[in-house]
Amino acid sequence: MDREQEELQFLGFFGILKESLKIICSWRKIFTQITLSFIFPLSFIFLAHIQISQLIFANILNNQDALNYTQAGTLGYDKLSDVISSEWVSFWLFKAAYFTFLLILSLLSTSAVVYTIACIYTGKETSFKKVISVVPKVWKRLFVTFLWSFAIVFFYDVASGVVLLVPLAVLGFGGLGMSVFVLLFIPYLAGLVYVSLVWQLASVVSVLEEDYGMKAVKKSKALIKGKIGVAAAVFLVLVVGFIGIQAVFEISVLFYWSMSVEMRIGIPILCFVMLFSVMLFGLVAQTVIYFVCKSYHHENIDKSSLADHLEVYLGEYVPLKAKDVQLEQFHV
Image (tube, rainbow, N blue to C red; front, top):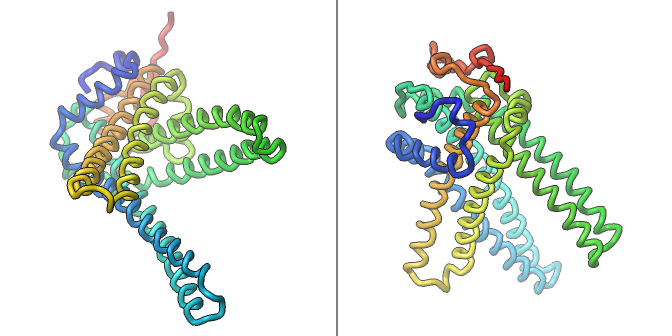
Protein backbone atom coordinates (compact mmCIF):
# COMPACT_ATOMS: atom_id res chain seq x y z
CA MET A 1 0.00 0.00 0.00
CA ASP A 2 2.11 2.83 -1.29
CA ARG A 3 -0.68 5.41 -1.26
CA GLU A 4 -0.72 8.31 1.17
CA GLN A 5 -3.38 8.14 3.88
CA GLU A 6 -5.22 11.18 2.53
CA GLU A 7 -5.55 9.51 -0.88
CA LEU A 8 -7.18 6.36 0.44
CA GLN A 9 -10.47 8.11 1.22
CA PHE A 10 -10.99 8.70 -2.51
CA LEU A 11 -10.83 5.01 -3.42
CA GLY A 12 -14.14 3.87 -4.86
CA PHE A 13 -15.44 0.43 -5.76
CA PHE A 14 -12.93 -0.31 -8.51
CA GLY A 15 -10.14 1.46 -6.60
CA ILE A 16 -10.58 -0.88 -3.61
CA LEU A 17 -10.66 -3.95 -5.86
CA LYS A 18 -7.55 -2.77 -7.71
CA GLU A 19 -5.68 -1.95 -4.49
CA SER A 20 -6.56 -5.35 -2.99
CA LEU A 21 -5.38 -7.20 -6.09
CA LYS A 22 -2.20 -5.10 -6.19
CA ILE A 23 -1.36 -6.00 -2.57
CA ILE A 24 -1.83 -9.72 -3.21
CA CYS A 25 0.27 -9.68 -6.38
CA SER A 26 3.03 -7.52 -4.87
CA TRP A 27 3.36 -9.74 -1.79
CA ARG A 28 2.42 -13.05 -3.36
CA LYS A 29 5.00 -15.06 -1.41
CA ILE A 30 3.68 -14.35 2.08
CA PHE A 31 0.03 -14.50 0.95
CA THR A 32 0.74 -17.85 -0.69
CA GLN A 33 2.14 -19.09 2.62
CA ILE A 34 -0.90 -17.78 4.52
CA THR A 35 -3.22 -19.37 1.97
CA LEU A 36 -1.51 -22.74 2.18
CA SER A 37 -1.55 -22.68 6.00
CA PHE A 38 -5.05 -21.35 6.72
CA ILE A 39 -7.22 -20.58 3.69
CA PHE A 40 -6.55 -23.86 1.83
CA PRO A 41 -7.72 -25.96 4.81
CA LEU A 42 -10.65 -23.58 5.35
CA SER A 43 -11.78 -23.96 1.72
CA PHE A 44 -11.28 -27.72 1.75
CA ILE A 45 -13.29 -28.16 4.95
CA PHE A 46 -16.11 -26.01 3.59
CA LEU A 47 -16.44 -28.01 0.36
CA ALA A 48 -15.92 -31.38 2.05
CA HIS A 49 -18.64 -30.47 4.54
CA ILE A 50 -21.13 -29.97 1.70
CA GLN A 51 -20.44 -33.38 0.16
CA ILE A 52 -20.30 -35.34 3.43
CA SER A 53 -23.47 -33.66 4.75
CA GLN A 54 -25.36 -34.56 1.58
CA LEU A 55 -24.19 -38.18 1.77
CA ILE A 56 -25.20 -38.58 5.41
CA PHE A 57 -28.53 -36.84 4.88
CA ALA A 58 -29.26 -38.96 1.77
CA ASN A 59 -28.68 -42.13 3.83
CA ILE A 60 -31.03 -40.83 6.51
CA LEU A 61 -33.76 -40.13 3.95
CA ASN A 62 -33.34 -43.56 2.35
CA ASN A 63 -33.56 -45.32 5.71
CA GLN A 64 -36.52 -43.16 6.73
CA ASP A 65 -38.27 -44.09 3.49
CA ALA A 66 -37.58 -47.78 4.15
CA LEU A 67 -38.89 -47.38 7.70
CA ASN A 68 -42.19 -46.03 6.39
CA TYR A 69 -42.71 -49.29 4.50
CA THR A 70 -41.69 -51.51 7.43
CA GLN A 71 -44.25 -52.83 9.87
CA ALA A 72 -43.97 -51.25 13.31
CA GLY A 73 -42.96 -53.51 16.19
CA THR A 74 -40.92 -55.88 14.04
CA LEU A 75 -37.21 -56.58 14.43
CA GLY A 76 -36.48 -54.87 11.11
CA TYR A 77 -38.39 -51.76 12.19
CA ASP A 78 -36.49 -51.49 15.47
CA LYS A 79 -33.17 -52.01 13.69
CA LEU A 80 -33.91 -49.28 11.14
CA SER A 81 -35.00 -46.90 13.92
CA ASP A 82 -31.70 -47.45 15.72
CA VAL A 83 -29.75 -46.88 12.51
CA ILE A 84 -31.59 -43.63 11.78
CA SER A 85 -31.05 -42.38 15.33
CA SER A 86 -27.34 -43.21 15.07
CA GLU A 87 -27.11 -41.42 11.72
CA TRP A 88 -28.76 -38.28 13.11
CA VAL A 89 -26.28 -38.27 16.00
CA SER A 90 -23.40 -38.64 13.52
CA PHE A 91 -24.86 -35.87 11.37
CA TRP A 92 -25.04 -33.33 14.21
CA LEU A 93 -21.67 -34.32 15.66
CA PHE A 94 -20.15 -33.80 12.21
CA LYS A 95 -21.86 -30.39 11.96
CA ALA A 96 -20.50 -29.39 15.38
CA ALA A 97 -16.96 -30.44 14.45
CA TYR A 98 -17.23 -28.65 11.11
CA PHE A 99 -18.36 -25.34 12.60
CA THR A 100 -15.65 -25.56 15.26
CA PHE A 101 -12.85 -26.00 12.70
CA LEU A 102 -14.47 -23.44 10.38
CA LEU A 103 -14.52 -20.83 13.14
CA ILE A 104 -10.92 -21.47 14.22
CA LEU A 105 -9.53 -21.35 10.69
CA SER A 106 -11.60 -18.25 9.85
CA LEU A 107 -10.24 -16.40 12.87
CA LEU A 108 -6.68 -17.47 12.14
CA SER A 109 -6.99 -16.48 8.47
CA THR A 110 -8.40 -13.06 9.37
CA SER A 111 -5.69 -12.45 11.96
CA ALA A 112 -2.90 -13.40 9.56
CA VAL A 113 -4.14 -11.33 6.62
CA VAL A 114 -4.99 -8.20 8.63
CA TYR A 115 -1.67 -8.26 10.50
CA THR A 116 0.27 -8.79 7.26
CA ILE A 117 -1.43 -5.88 5.47
CA ALA A 118 -0.82 -3.63 8.49
CA CYS A 119 2.88 -4.49 8.27
CA ILE A 120 2.85 -3.74 4.53
CA TYR A 121 1.04 -0.47 5.18
CA THR A 122 3.66 0.68 7.70
CA GLY A 123 6.55 -0.46 5.53
CA LYS A 124 7.55 -2.83 8.29
CA GLU A 125 9.54 -5.90 7.36
CA THR A 126 7.47 -9.00 7.89
CA SER A 127 7.79 -12.72 7.36
CA PHE A 128 5.54 -15.73 7.60
CA LYS A 129 7.38 -16.81 10.75
CA LYS A 130 6.54 -13.51 12.42
CA VAL A 131 2.90 -13.73 11.30
CA ILE A 132 2.62 -17.23 12.76
CA SER A 133 4.04 -16.02 16.08
CA VAL A 134 1.52 -13.16 16.32
CA VAL A 135 -1.64 -14.87 15.06
CA PRO A 136 -2.23 -17.14 18.12
CA LYS A 137 -2.20 -14.05 20.36
CA VAL A 138 -4.56 -12.04 18.15
CA TRP A 139 -7.31 -14.56 17.38
CA LYS A 140 -8.58 -14.56 20.99
CA ARG A 141 -9.54 -10.90 20.61
CA LEU A 142 -11.24 -11.76 17.34
CA PHE A 143 -13.18 -14.57 19.03
CA VAL A 144 -14.70 -12.16 21.56
CA THR A 145 -15.71 -9.85 18.72
CA PHE A 146 -17.16 -12.83 16.87
CA LEU A 147 -19.34 -13.76 19.84
CA TRP A 148 -20.77 -10.24 20.08
CA SER A 149 -21.28 -9.97 16.33
CA PHE A 150 -22.91 -13.40 16.16
CA ALA A 151 -25.27 -12.47 19.00
CA ILE A 152 -26.26 -9.27 17.18
CA VAL A 153 -26.92 -11.14 13.91
CA PHE A 154 -28.87 -13.84 15.77
CA PHE A 155 -31.20 -11.41 17.52
CA TYR A 156 -31.56 -9.38 14.34
CA ASP A 157 -32.63 -12.50 12.42
CA VAL A 158 -35.04 -13.60 15.16
CA ALA A 159 -36.67 -10.17 15.42
CA SER A 160 -36.83 -9.80 11.64
CA GLY A 161 -38.24 -13.31 11.29
CA VAL A 162 -41.13 -12.42 13.58
CA VAL A 163 -41.84 -9.24 11.62
CA LEU A 164 -41.67 -11.08 8.29
CA LEU A 165 -43.99 -13.90 9.38
CA VAL A 166 -46.72 -11.67 10.82
CA PRO A 167 -48.12 -10.61 7.40
CA LEU A 168 -48.21 -14.24 6.26
CA ALA A 169 -49.93 -15.33 9.45
CA VAL A 170 -52.53 -12.55 9.27
CA LEU A 171 -53.02 -12.17 5.50
CA GLY A 172 -52.13 -15.70 4.41
CA PHE A 173 -49.96 -16.80 1.48
CA GLY A 174 -52.09 -15.04 -1.11
CA GLY A 175 -51.13 -12.08 -3.26
CA LEU A 176 -51.52 -9.44 -0.55
CA GLY A 177 -49.66 -11.43 2.10
CA MET A 178 -46.75 -12.23 -0.24
CA SER A 179 -46.59 -8.61 -1.45
CA VAL A 180 -46.23 -7.32 2.11
CA PHE A 181 -43.68 -10.06 2.83
CA VAL A 182 -41.53 -9.02 -0.15
CA LEU A 183 -41.76 -5.33 0.80
CA LEU A 184 -40.50 -6.18 4.30
CA PHE A 185 -37.89 -8.67 3.07
CA ILE A 186 -36.01 -6.05 1.03
CA PRO A 187 -35.17 -3.79 4.02
CA TYR A 188 -34.34 -6.94 6.00
CA LEU A 189 -31.68 -7.86 3.42
CA ALA A 190 -30.34 -4.30 3.44
CA GLY A 191 -30.07 -4.43 7.22
CA LEU A 192 -28.34 -7.82 7.07
CA VAL A 193 -25.75 -6.46 4.64
CA TYR A 194 -25.11 -3.50 6.96
CA VAL A 195 -24.72 -5.74 10.02
CA SER A 196 -22.32 -7.97 8.07
CA LEU A 197 -20.22 -4.96 7.04
CA VAL A 198 -19.98 -3.79 10.64
CA TRP A 199 -18.98 -7.32 11.67
CA GLN A 200 -16.20 -7.47 9.08
CA LEU A 201 -14.82 -4.06 9.95
CA ALA A 202 -15.00 -4.91 13.67
CA SER A 203 -12.72 -7.89 12.99
CA VAL A 204 -10.05 -5.59 11.54
CA VAL A 205 -10.45 -3.13 14.43
CA SER A 206 -9.97 -6.01 16.90
CA VAL A 207 -6.59 -6.86 15.34
CA LEU A 208 -5.16 -3.36 14.84
CA GLU A 209 -6.63 -1.36 17.72
CA GLU A 210 -7.12 -1.76 21.44
CA ASP A 211 -10.89 -2.18 21.09
CA TYR A 212 -12.46 -5.59 20.68
CA GLY A 213 -15.80 -7.17 21.43
CA MET A 214 -18.70 -4.74 21.63
CA LYS A 215 -16.33 -1.76 21.61
CA ALA A 216 -14.94 -2.88 18.25
CA VAL A 217 -18.49 -3.25 16.91
CA LYS A 218 -19.33 0.32 17.98
CA LYS A 219 -16.06 1.61 16.53
CA SER A 220 -16.67 -0.09 13.18
CA LYS A 221 -20.23 1.27 13.10
CA ALA A 222 -18.80 4.78 13.36
CA LEU A 223 -16.06 4.10 10.80
CA ILE A 224 -18.39 2.69 8.12
CA LYS A 225 -20.44 5.91 7.99
CA GLY A 226 -19.97 7.64 4.67
CA LYS A 227 -18.54 4.53 3.02
CA ILE A 228 -21.47 2.15 3.35
CA GLY A 229 -22.27 2.23 -0.37
CA VAL A 230 -18.83 1.28 -1.68
CA ALA A 231 -18.27 -1.25 1.14
CA ALA A 232 -21.65 -2.86 0.43
CA ALA A 233 -20.85 -3.07 -3.30
CA VAL A 234 -17.57 -4.90 -2.61
CA PHE A 235 -19.30 -7.15 -0.07
CA LEU A 236 -22.12 -8.09 -2.46
CA VAL A 237 -19.71 -8.92 -5.29
CA LEU A 238 -17.82 -11.28 -2.98
CA VAL A 239 -21.07 -12.82 -1.66
CA VAL A 240 -22.36 -13.41 -5.19
CA GLY A 241 -19.07 -15.08 -6.10
CA PHE A 242 -19.15 -17.21 -2.95
CA ILE A 243 -22.78 -18.29 -3.48
CA GLY A 244 -22.08 -19.06 -7.14
CA ILE A 245 -19.13 -21.32 -6.25
CA GLN A 246 -21.18 -23.09 -3.60
CA ALA A 247 -24.11 -23.61 -5.98
CA VAL A 248 -21.89 -25.06 -8.72
CA PHE A 249 -20.24 -27.45 -6.25
CA GLU A 250 -23.57 -28.59 -4.77
CA ILE A 251 -24.96 -29.26 -8.25
CA SER A 252 -21.83 -31.25 -9.12
CA VAL A 253 -22.30 -33.34 -5.98
CA LEU A 254 -25.98 -33.88 -6.75
CA PHE A 255 -25.32 -35.05 -10.33
CA TYR A 256 -21.94 -36.64 -9.60
CA TRP A 257 -22.72 -40.08 -11.05
CA SER A 258 -24.25 -38.67 -14.24
CA MET A 259 -21.16 -36.62 -15.13
CA SER A 260 -18.07 -37.63 -17.07
CA VAL A 261 -14.85 -38.47 -15.25
CA GLU A 262 -13.30 -35.22 -16.42
CA MET A 263 -16.16 -33.17 -14.96
CA ARG A 264 -16.12 -35.13 -11.70
CA ILE A 265 -12.48 -34.16 -11.22
CA GLY A 266 -12.43 -30.77 -12.91
CA ILE A 267 -15.45 -29.07 -11.31
CA PRO A 268 -14.44 -29.72 -7.65
CA ILE A 269 -10.87 -28.55 -8.37
CA LEU A 270 -12.15 -25.41 -10.12
CA CYS A 271 -14.53 -24.66 -7.23
CA PHE A 272 -11.72 -25.18 -4.72
CA VAL A 273 -9.34 -22.82 -6.54
CA MET A 274 -12.03 -20.16 -6.97
CA LEU A 275 -13.16 -20.48 -3.35
CA PHE A 276 -9.78 -19.92 -1.70
CA SER A 277 -9.13 -17.07 -4.16
CA VAL A 278 -12.39 -15.34 -3.20
CA MET A 279 -11.70 -15.90 0.51
CA LEU A 280 -8.21 -14.40 0.31
CA PHE A 281 -9.38 -11.47 -1.79
CA GLY A 282 -12.26 -10.82 0.61
CA LEU A 283 -9.97 -10.70 3.66
CA VAL A 284 -7.59 -8.32 1.91
CA ALA A 285 -10.44 -6.12 0.66
CA GLN A 286 -12.03 -5.76 4.10
CA THR A 287 -8.68 -4.59 5.51
CA VAL A 288 -8.27 -2.08 2.67
CA ILE A 289 -11.79 -0.82 3.40
CA TYR A 290 -10.74 -0.27 7.03
CA PHE A 291 -7.90 2.02 5.96
CA VAL A 292 -10.19 3.77 3.47
CA CYS A 293 -12.71 4.46 6.26
CA LYS A 294 -9.97 5.70 8.59
CA SER A 295 -8.77 8.08 5.89
CA TYR A 296 -12.33 9.24 5.11
CA HIS A 297 -12.85 10.23 8.77
CA HIS A 298 -9.38 11.83 8.85
CA GLU A 299 -8.19 9.37 11.50
CA ASN A 300 -4.64 9.23 10.24
CA ILE A 301 -2.67 6.47 11.90
CA ASP A 302 0.91 7.29 12.76
CA LYS A 303 2.82 4.64 10.83
CA SER A 304 5.74 4.51 13.23
CA SER A 305 3.39 4.03 16.20
CA LEU A 306 1.45 1.34 14.38
CA ALA A 307 4.71 -0.37 13.44
CA ASP A 308 5.80 -0.37 17.09
CA HIS A 309 2.50 -1.84 18.22
CA LEU A 310 2.68 -4.58 15.62
CA GLU A 311 5.81 -5.88 17.31
CA VAL A 312 5.72 -8.76 19.71
CA TYR A 313 7.14 -7.58 23.02
CA LEU A 314 8.20 -10.30 25.40
CA GLY A 315 5.81 -12.71 23.73
CA GLU A 316 2.80 -10.40 24.13
CA TYR A 317 0.88 -8.87 21.24
CA VAL A 318 0.39 -5.12 21.71
CA PRO A 319 -2.51 -3.61 19.74
CA LEU A 320 -2.69 -0.05 18.46
CA LYS A 321 -3.99 2.23 21.21
CA ALA A 322 -6.34 5.13 20.72
CA LYS A 323 -3.66 7.67 21.59
CA ASP A 324 -1.67 6.56 18.54
CA VAL A 325 -4.50 7.58 16.23
CA GLN A 326 -4.47 11.28 15.59
CA LEU A 327 -7.78 12.80 14.52
CA GLU A 328 -7.18 15.77 12.26
CA GLN A 329 -9.96 18.31 11.86
CA PHE A 330 -10.36 19.64 8.35
CA HIS A 331 -12.22 22.88 7.93
CA VAL A 332 -13.75 23.96 4.66
